[in-house]
Amino acid sequence: MTKVHKPYVIFEDKDHKFVWLGLDESEYEKGILTNQYLIVDGDKGVLLDPGGYFVFERVYENVKQFINPNNIIAILYSHQDPDVIGSLNLWLDVSPEAKIYVSALWERFLPHIGVGGIKIVDIPDKGMDIKCNNIMIKAIPAHFMHSPGNFHYYDPRAKIYFSGDLGAAVFPEGKWYLFVENFDEHKKLMEGFHKRYIATRKAIDLWLKRIKDLKIDIIAPQHGSIFQGENVKKFIDWLSSLDKVGIDLMEVDFQQE
Image 1 (cartoon, rainbow, N blue to C red):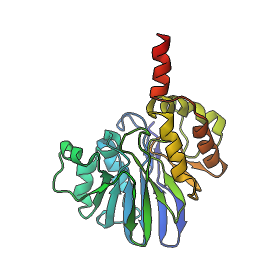
Image 2 (spheres, rainbow, N blue to C red):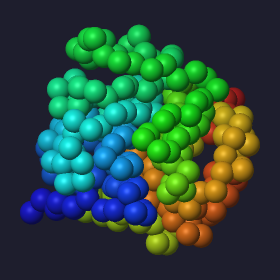
Image 3 (cartoon, rainbow, N blue to C red):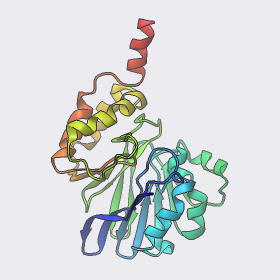
């Protein structure tokens, strides 16, 4: 029987919400399970990595529980992968006023998925602040983790950090949980992805410097489970401890051939 998980409000304070937009563990949502998020501030909304074609119906129906899709003013993309941007043309139909925020590196690729005449805002490599009604969402550079043009998004009111593919976990069939409880067990599900997909250890070091002054209560990744409380620090410490990743590992493999 297909498991359907309803949306969950991760943070709520008066007129501000940060919402996880549910999950459908069906064969129809093909590939690795993905997370989508909605920030609501007043009567305006912002979508974070709304996902591929197959998840659109589920995400759209769940968004409507919190806000009129016509009031979505921004769609923020971490990078260019199809599980991130594949539903863009569908969202343009239901949220025509939304501006699309994406790395300047990937802006020219978006027309290749069949969209045109869209309001694209190029995010410069150094990042930027994005106005959402009464708050400013920060686009944090996370280049080469894994995409060369990659951004995370920080909601300063909720103190929630959307980390894109950083924090991704690959679950065995039949296993899934929304929040990390046992970090030592969970890190086993993350290790393979992070060692292979993060380009180099230098990318981790640069990212650590960029986030060191942020107050982060929750880290919400696009794949896997959400980190809160002490598991936020455990996750950051775990990333800090990774020695060889990406090309560093491949260099070792090449030398051993």
